[in-house]
Image (cartoon, rainbow, N blue to C red; front, side):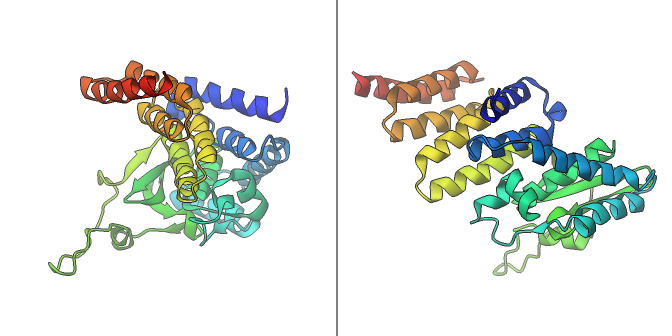
Amino acid sequence: MNSQQESLRILRRAGEQEGTAISLGEAALALASLEKQGADLTPYRQHLAVLIEQMRSGGTATTLEMYLQRLRHVLVVQNKYQGDDNHNEDPRATNLMDAIDRRRGSPVMLGLIYLHVATAMGWAMTGLDLSGHFLLRLSARDGQVVIDPFRAGQTCQLEAAGDYLVDEDEEEGRSSTLLDLSSELLRPLDNRELLLRLQHAVKHRLLSQDRLEAAIATLQGMILFAPRHQDLWKELGYLQAERGHLRAAITALEVVKDLAADSLPVQQTDVMLRELRWRLN
């Protein structure tokens, strides 16, 4: 089995698993390998294993402060992971293999690495989708805290967390809302949602560069580990139609109909399908 076949197998298996059961490291490496046309996963798996071994070598951590110190020591001090200020433009920031090689990444990519090692340690950590930003919530017996993987695992105080909200209206004199750790705005992401967020960033960048074929390939990879997300199939169908791949577009939109939970998406999809079949004939 070559690297590309192995990556496809990993992602298909992830598509059959519950979101919390997906291995972030394995799935992200599989996506990176597909993007790099079958690059070998082995050295990158070894690096992730080394990170976990370094985490364990520090002995047993029992408090929130010990958790934080261990994460920062291993990921920031020993391995020099840091945020990539050009992550919106640089494709390397959202590819795990490149992030490992460069020790730089986007907020979601760095968060993924933090989550991978924390999960291996049995620690309670979740990714948080916060108004366009990505943070982590780390919990222990003596409390919980929100940290920023993009800024060397710094703790986000409540006031600082409020700064992430883009709801300030200077004309009306309103200030941004401060958050507490139980806020509904701090919505936890499961592993599938985190991977989707990572790949959506890749897809948006490709579309902004008019690289439709590459965006289609990215969507196809997303569908492998999220096969029941009808919005992915719908977007794939529209992009395939835009590229003139009418049969592929029809196939994708037929899946949307199968997955739709209510009649409105089905009606909208039927209109598009009729048009595509007319164009095909």
